[in-house]
Image 1 (cartoon, rainbow, N blue to C red):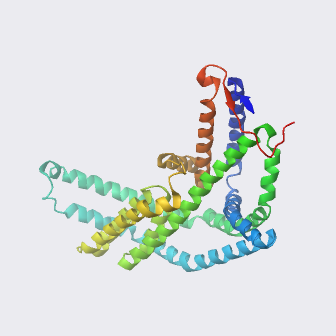
Image 2 (tube, rainbow, N blue to C red):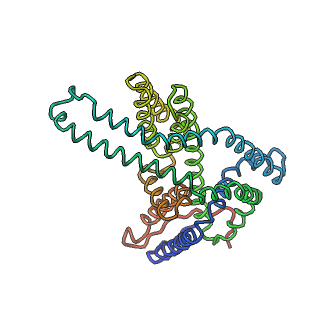
Length: 374
């Protein structure tokens, strides 16, 4: 079967999808304050659906498979909260209290350090460099401390967490129970002459989002455990907190390891001064972690077929975070992946259209085997 793609047809399709995107953005902006538990529940159901399908193949009913999965997930999650969260909360509180003292000690160290070994042209500017570094260090760390304190003391944040813990499992239960039926229902609404194309796009979206989030989730979890345990064994103050933060930020290439290295090195410098051994151990430990991430974990868990460029990912995080707050940060990765897939599809269709060639073009469209010819 062949289908002619005219310029006007391509424009109509583009207008339809742009209008759908505009409606989706308006919906997010109108309901962003209440969407968090629903988005979290939908994401949980999406990622647990393959497990439910596997349990069904083993003989369990969909209801029983859903109950088993969610009960197991909730037990593991609650135990993790009971064991890890109190320690992280304690270290976060202590870190906020110690930030001014650490900044003062680092400024003193920088101001009194001997730079005779540096080149003359650089040594002549050392006073200016020290002053600027101390200024930016104080402003940057002060901003981070204030931000963490505001987040920690925010009643709205605590309310969001409470609603997340209560509403999310309920939403996930009902969505996971009816997931396959919902997908089949939506598939039935797709125009029959476009069903093959829509299924192709949906399959690519699923591959990209699931591959990135599942792979990066496993990567961040491993690195968080690696850095948290390693820094704690070194004896670094707030090692668990810094390691956990490093792991959480590792889904952005080099950002997590850089932030963790700067924080850990600063704390080690103040804590163990004038002993350089621990500082060297911290630096070597982070470089070994970066080597493991880049050469072992990243190729195995994520691979190179996801198609999310780091710059596009960071832009999406900042843009969606600025527009929709914390909910925007949560949907930034799947939204960025979805936009990337749709842009690649639109570009491929454009390169096959008469808008590109300047004449009518006939392209082959594979018929859907599930749709009979009339």
